[in-house]
Length: 107
Image 1 (cartoon, rainbow, N blue to C red):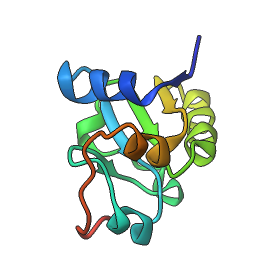
Image 2 (cartoon, rainbow, N blue to C red; image 1 turned 90 degrees about the vertical axis):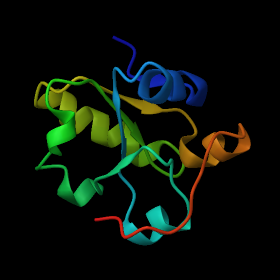
Image 3 (cartoon, rainbow, N blue to C red; image 1 turned 180 degrees about the horizontal axis):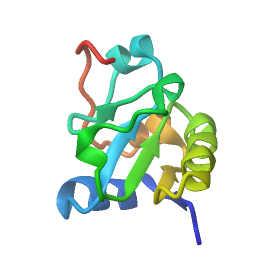
Image 4 (cartoon, rainbow, N blue to C red; image 1 turned 120 degrees about the vertical axis):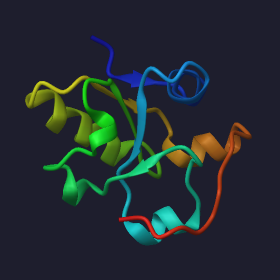
């Protein structure tokens, strides 16, 4: 199974059709610098507890460049969680002109 998707596919799956939950696995300072408005913040260090919104939904994981989210997908897949990561992460997301907001508390 392909575990990587483009930013456009991520936007489609998480916002436009809403079937998947977008989870940002970066740290709080990175989250505040800019994140997807509808993303849930869950740093990699907190992956042991998935948010209630994740229950029964596929996950789309994003980080800054795609490296941490790719690792997080492997961790979650080993636990039987359906997840994919976003190729190029938030860097690619912003370059594609997709929505980004700054601030917020994060986890």
